[in-house]
Image (cartoon, rainbow, N blue to C red; front, top):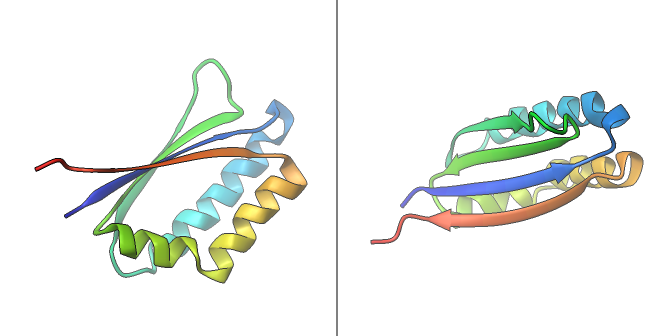
Length: 96
């Protein structure tokens, strides 16, 4: 069953461009993983430092394998430590 992973990230406006570069690297890394379908990053019209990522994965397990990988964790840590990115995560599955 496919799942949607929603990740909302916030950063000060002057770091917005760098955050989007790192998000592109995360998307590129995800595209190499089994179970990844696609994702989109939506930038808030009110705040360019707020991005909502909506990723579609084959399963929760597939997403968690990717999320726990060293490159994913390193990119997340880099965003948090050097840019001060705050992230909120939620996983949604189709209710049957």
